[in-house]
Structure formats: C-alpha cells, structure tokens
Image (cartoon, rainbow, N blue to C red; front, side):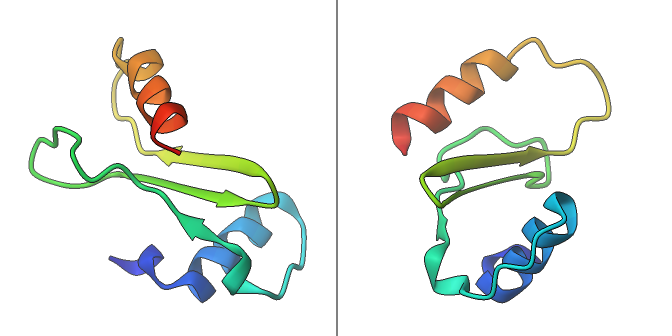
Length: 76
C-alpha cells in the first residue's frame, strides 16, 4: 500500500494541510487491521503531532462512520 511509506504519507499530509513538515519518523500509522472490507482497503489513519488524521474514500453515504471513528479513537 502506497501510504505505508511514511515519506509518502508525510507528503500527503503536507499537501492536504499546506505545511512542509520534514520528519516522517514523527508519524505513527494506526490504520485499523481488523475492519470489514468489501474487496479493497480504502482507509488510512495516523497519529501526528498529538492529533489523529483519518482518511477514507466513500462512494456513498455510510451510516457506520461514527462507529468506525469510535474504533479508531479507542484503538489509538
């Protein structure tokens, strides 16, 4: 998976936030491993500077998102 490379993940973070952090070792990837997937993995989660960053591609409305957010927060 592309964003298991912390350098690429930091590039994504910087692009989305207009920042220019340079230390990929400050990232901690915490993507859920035991989530239910329908053929592909489409989520990403990491800790950075005392915050949690959650990304998930959604094609349609998903009523389970509050529960998934709870899983991320309780697991991190």
